[in-house]
Amino acid sequence: MPLIVIAEDEFLLADMLAAMLEDAGYEVASAAHGRDALTLVRERRPQLVITDFMMPLMTGLELAQAIRSENDLSTIPIMLVSGAQGSIGRANPDMFDLVLDKPYTENSLLAAVQNLIPPNSV
Amino acid sequence: MSQELPRLSTGISGLDAVLAGGLVKGASYIVQGQPGAGKTIFSNQIAFSCVAKGYKVLYVTLLAETHERLFQALGTIEFFDRSRLGISISYVSVFQTLRDKGLSDVVSLIREEISRQGATLLVFDGLLNARDRGDSALDVKTFIAEVQSQAAFVGCTVLFLTSTRIVEDSPEHTMVDGVIELHNELVGVRSVRRLQVKKSRGSASLGGYHQFEITKNGVVVYPRMEAEFAHSSSPDTYEPRSIDSGTEGLDSLLGGGLPQGSVTLVFGPSGCGKTSLGLNFLGRASAHEPALHFGFYETPARLRSKAQAIGIDLETPLNSGALELLWAPMTENLLDKLGHRLLEAVKARRVRRLLIDGLGGFERAAIHPPRLVEFFAALTNELRGLGVTALATWELRDLFGPTVTAPGPGISSLLDNLVMLRHVEVASRYKRTLAILKVRDGKFEQVIHEIEFGRNGLFVAAPLGAVSGATTGLASPSDRTVQSQS
Image (cartoon, rainbow over all chains, first blue to last red; front, side):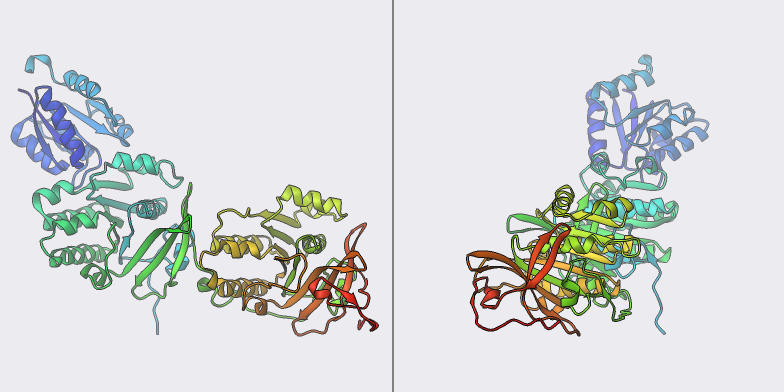
């Protein structure tokens, strides 16, 4: 079961996102900010990281920069899910493999996830 | 020697005046009010004002509502700038940190975040949730003390938002430097928003309730006139000089004209010529003496039509910019908004001739009528200080009869001059009459005169024939001869 790490400070969004992904058959580990998420990524080596932008202690962009700077993590796909900072994400294509604007539908989310996690890893 | 505290301008019109210059930099405030009172718009407006000045803002929430919903709501208001999100203003939720780790971890997170962001302003929305989480009042007191001391250390101003009413002797209240309470109350059938600064350490803020409204530009506060203008903002440079009333024959009755920098009440029943007398006054507008009509009854279009019909040329001064017509419909008005709007219009064009048509419009807007005396005292003092010569009309309720209802007790004495207009029935004819009842510090004609409409508006005609009871509107012949004193 592929593992996805979620970095989202807003608990309602984090809970909803986790429920959608778990229902679709993914394993999910959540962190309330970028710094905890980075710890999780180092420990668990997920197949995908889904991150918000504005978070305490470490933003989504800072999280992506940290992941990309570590050799053994740098190839992990990262999806930015953001309401207002999608443009910042798109301006940093080397950091984010995909930018999904809030609000999103379950279908668009799952399609994006399937796009980033190769089928052979399922 | 007293020292001025460094201030952070709020960017909310009128609020800096209430706060004696703005928020104190590095100080902590509780902003409290029931849901719907306007706390969120209030605090976000201050936040975006800081952002516009190039400062960084940290907006921390403990709420269940998502930030995206907040942005959607704020998106309808002018000050909100989505492009600054995540760049100069960060909205972060610490709900999970509070739930999983407790208040002390939230304090650590906020301390680190203020420093990391270089924030000038911290907004903490959800003090109620922090209270619920605290095991004792001491926990919340410690939380507030720690957050505010850490913020103050780096010069960051803090707004703690809460929807509960925090009582005066609660730990939260005693800890912070200021408490601002927002109200949205029903008064009769209408709702009125009011703001009160309940605590303001080290600052002489304006006390009591101040009306405010939420517009597409955000919160606009109207400081209570009598509090803001307890003393006239301009020195009274009174020089005895008269200005032309614009009504033929009236200046001689007034002892030479309207005293400059005075307020004259023109009162009488409907249709007796009050507005026409005022239009004569405005018709004398010039670049040297700009004029303003501040009215509640006729729209500008109807007023122009009326002036044209009675032979008063308003078009020339309107076209040259010497005259402005401002109309405030008699609907849901706010007393202090009217007062501030009037003063701003006067200041903007250095108005010298003002017609307020009529004072009843202010009276109707007062949700607490007993303060009208203080309100008019502040307004008239300010107008005198600005060198404005003003006519204000007041409509008497009864067309005829012995009862004359002057503006509320105490208000008439604030006015310098009193001119009464009446319909008088004499020998089966109605006559319009004018009587001067008071000219402050001046001699005036005490004989009642008839007034008539001529080719160029209203004019003072002959003294009224010898009758008695004219001021009641019901005259009877008198055998005494009338002699003009002028």
